[in-house]
Image (cartoon, rainbow, N blue to C red; front, side, top):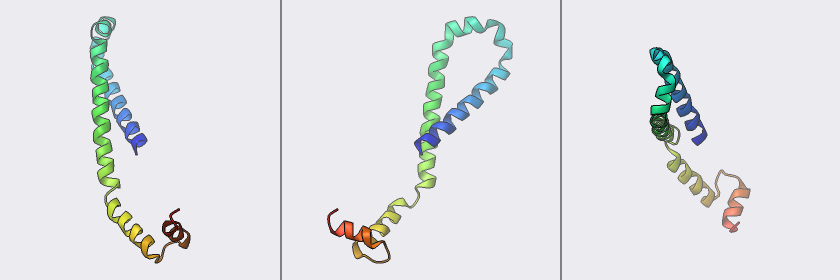
Length: 98
């Protein structure tokens, strides 16, 4: 889930960067000056955007894909404790103390 979130966030930042490169073509003659003068600021801004996008996408992934996990795990634990309709080996391991 974390790897997928990093991938999507970095992909979005790359798309955004390529879009800006196309739109700001008129700044190309001054590129060396701008990079020397504002390069670290732009890099920090891009890193912050990447971090915020990652956090937002991770939260969205957790909300959408881990929706009823607690309830499902409680149901499985209840089945393991009663020994009904779940693998006998797993029930044996749980009751035997591993």
